[in-house]
Length: 449
Image: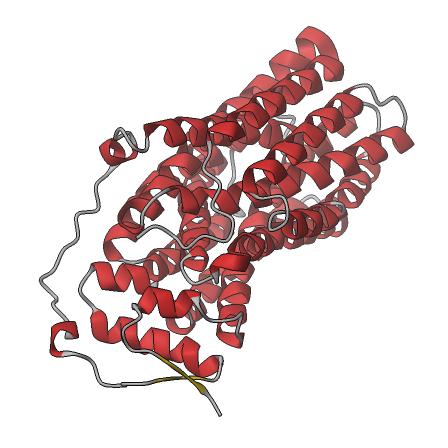
């Protein structure tokens, strides 16, 4: 017989007491598919850059701006998306961002010049930047505390799925014809259709609904998850005080709230980690196929090596998902960042194909495992009223580094070659590892409302 849950428990406590149910799985997979589509879009541009360098005879500076335009949009989108998610809801913003970047990606396939492509990439980034912190916040607010970190790492692991799909498309489609890069970008319009499913199929955060006085909908959502776990509520009727109060408006705060006395230390640490990880990750992986071509490998071989390197992201996520509930968030994040630094140094000194592939796979393993841990810890830093805002600003600060990194790569390569470039990336990973000591450890704890 189903167990009874005492009505005196709050809704969030009732959610936190549940095991992982098929409703949790549905939310994880539904959000994860959107995450994978995001990664596919970001990954595709690295292959597009490599072909445009040959087909359009674009300069390194032009290629850098094509890459960086998307990250400018991501920086703006991350901040706006977080603010909107704390005001109109996580699910609403999630669906809207998928629609924006999906349509913009499809339109960018029709670009006839570098300037037009740069403009479209900004719009793509606007949607993409808003989606990731909002999705991780939504899933965090439903996940059982004892496995919340693991679930968020699993959510982030969909990034590897999307990037692998991008690598397959890049390997098979981009080199196939002069318009191969256009066909590859056209595939990115798929998220526009997926947005309709997201809007209708996924639940809104119970914590957000309660903060807005929408108690009937919040109660309905909790019961939906309880039914999935075989749990019955002792007193199914709402109390009179629990009726909806549409005029209620919780104070969400903003940037100033993130830097209040109780939060400023963790905000500074979080922004530092986000900045350093973004700089090294996007500086390395956006340019990877182009760097391999510049090192003497053919376009097809460089795409093939990139595909092999990308596959190593999946075991990196798996290891991070396992360790994050055993070692904790900070320890797991720090270890994977140090591993990333060592891998970057090895990649910078690689001299033949086997060394490039081995060092690249290690870099993928540790770097993406670190990303999983970072996305797990970020929503845990802030209370509900500013959780999405905090995650959005952290991601936005990181995207500043993602803007700068592609522009810096040609300069560093001209100054000291690939060795200097990846030494700089390694240094940023070390700084990020040091920054983890300023983050709170929330393993097994309920989210702060």
